[in-house]
Image (cartoon, rainbow, N blue to C red; front, side):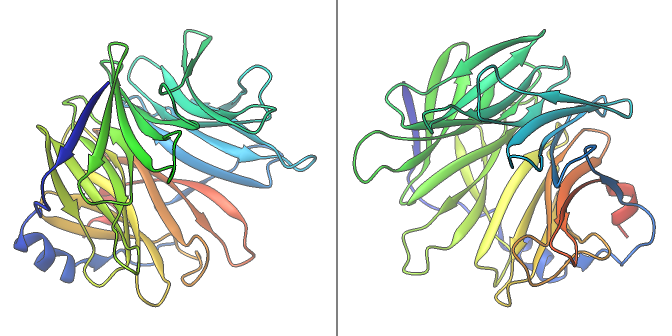
Length: 303
């Protein structure tokens, strides 16, 4: 297993901070956001989208409240359940239709998985106590996170390429999570710092160099997905507890807020994935506390 640990913060640049200070919130729209709700589900979360527009995520049923992965393709839902699992979560899909995610076994342990041509393959980082697979690119490179098996049980990001695991750690971080990877091999995710406040920051890892992505004055920023154009989606929470998604296009940031979504709440709006043509997926909480997936496009949210 290889390790990548960068020696210091390398910010995206002062211009990024200025850009986010001038970030323009998407207007409350009656149109432009299509809700995604799996049939019979009590909650639906859309997480990943392929270049073809196929969407993966997971939903909760009502009795018992277990989680099932899903594939939404051409308007039709197909459940994804790892054989023998208590719950299954689908989180990433690539151009060829390979799907990654994680599942909970009957012993209470989480494992990653890859679903390719109808066959499931478990993914477990050696020596880990749990493994989540979060994203996959056209080459079959997979990113995610795992917890090591010794105190203080730190969480690390990982890259799985051609059967070999590489650990990804932002230097000085309390934890690192890798969430998405594009065709070029650029990786986005989040890390928690070691400050008393334990703030969370997004990151971009490109050509073995980490760069911080942080919304000014927001204690939490998470980068969730990146496409082949280098556009990034994620979410942030401000000091008042308001949560919104964001789209980063070069040095410009646009907020993503589903009309009718709660502001101060457990979820708000979260953008999780986007494809090269600019289709964006995520999920949001409505005023009744219910979770719904959504599909929109950068053409509809950018001014």
